[in-house]
Image (cartoon, rainbow, N blue to C red; front, top):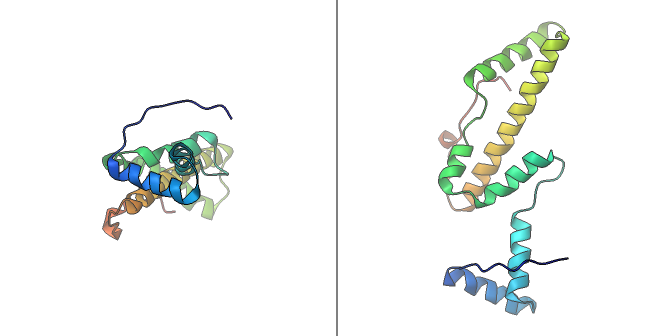
Length: 142
């Protein structure tokens, strides 16, 4: 595998952790750092590439950006429309146009849920307390 050299300033405490792991595993600090970054930025499998890469990149978001990402990304109008389509689908078969719209909104809804879950998981890993009132809800009827 080709490598790229990058100079990175690290807090002493972080470097000491890397150095200790390198010593314990008989590897170089560079190898431990590369393996750590690779493990943290792994894209979840089974998702569209764009979404998987977006979720992986969230590891380096600021806490403020993660709290923003934890907000629903469907507009209230989209949430209402998805709820209407789901209700209608329970009463009758959807038209082709309605089914297409429902599928589009379901994909958007599911992507929003994954983004929100990833943001909250990372915040929790960083030591933030995640309470039920911190988790924004939607009204799409899901």
